[in-house]
Amino acid sequence: MKIFNTMTRTKEEFKPIEPGKISMYVCGPTVYNLIHIGNARPMIVFDTFRRYMTHKGYEVNYVSNFTDVDDKIINKANEEGVDPSEVSERYIAECKKDMEGMNVLPATVHPKATEEIDGMIDLITDLIDKGYAYPTEDGTVYFRTRKAETYGKLSHKNIDDLESGHRSEGHALKVSGTAGKEDDLDFVLWKPKKEGEPFWKAPWCDGRPGWHTECCVMAKKYLGATIDIHAGGEDLIFPHHENEIAQSEAANGVEFSHYWMHNGFLNINGEKMSKSLGNFFTVRDIAEKYELQVLRFFMLTAQYRSPLNFSADLMEAAKTSLERIRTAVKNLDFLMKQNSAETLTDAEKENRAKAEGYVARFDDAMDDDLNTADAISVIFELVKFINTTTDENSSKEYLKALRDEVVMLSDILGLIVEPKEEGLLDADIEALIEERQQARKDKNFARADEIRDELAAKGIILEDTRQGVKWKRAD
Ligand code: AMP
Ligand code: ZN
Image (cartoon, rainbow, N blue to C red; front, top):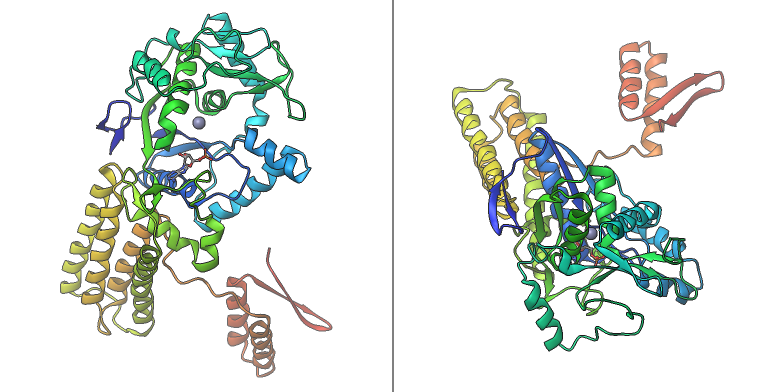
């Protein structure tokens, strides 16, 4: 498996720290609103990476945080006149619903920043002890950026250019509250509380942590001081990930992450989709018009590092494409039900071997830095192969082999292509119970048992009572 590592700007062979295991941290959303489809891109692509690596046999320990303390959350809470935790809890729940709709698996752990404050205070204390951080008079704690010798290594920025860049852009660096800041480049680790804001007690002042501190602490707590992969959208490379590296490596004295993966932007009319530009669609907006599987499919039509432009036409195309795979599966199901031949003919044996070639090519595409665009093309070639090599004379074994293959490849991408198990309606259940009663009267016990088993397989439990047959759905 080759992964493009932002740190080295090359595709590197992936080598885990521990054989067979992957520790992976993906920066999660700030929860003050419904997530937009730009936020959904890292969720979908890194979930796909996780699924693929799991399929290859790795045990993936996947941690993704919720940033649940932030100015935006506090502002929203003040607007609504509620506690910030009410806002963050509401949007965490909504985000989880969207994830489920997009078939994004829950992380192994979803830590919340507000539950990890003690660890952040410990980290900041350690950085102060080691001379990498300092508190100012008002209790703000800053990180001494220049003391981190390799600062800029991820974003490939030179620290001196950064400073002149800041100056020439006329950044308001000496804004109020920065008294005692030693250097323009120093960034905040802890900030004093303001009126009406949530705060935690700390040795420097009552206050709250800076955003960059969160992820270092949560990554170390759940995955260790050095992790295999750290991921997020490319806007996080600088300053967020650069500042995470500076703190982590200063405190722990070891490399923070071996690989850095960053997804490209989801754009609209050539511009990054973002809340601040107001050019966004929420996942919920899309769910009104499409099944969220279509959104997932659309996201995977591009390799994750490429920019991806969102448009109504592309969503329609995604819908049609996904339908094509589903139709192939339905056709196979239909043929499997009606065809009588059981075992493979010689020609089918040959074709089956050919079909396995698609799996190998799918893997090659995925092994090349998760090229889902090419992997999807391979699925379509397989669909074409299915459509041209199956008919009413195909054996069940051949049909099943092809079905298993197309479902497996789609599954790796998190795409659901099998027809949904239609749940039984109450009326259907009652009709079957009546038929069973009749069968018993007719002493056709075989049929009666068959009906009982059929219902049981669909989660319907029957109970014979004196008042007649009662039924319930299993939980
Ligand atoms: P935020 O809540 O803004 O911190 O974003 C959460 C995640 O979504 C981060 O990994 C961002 O990089 C990512 N993200 C935000 N907007 C976009 C976009 N338009 N395209 C791709 N990723 C994005
Ligand atoms: Zn982060």
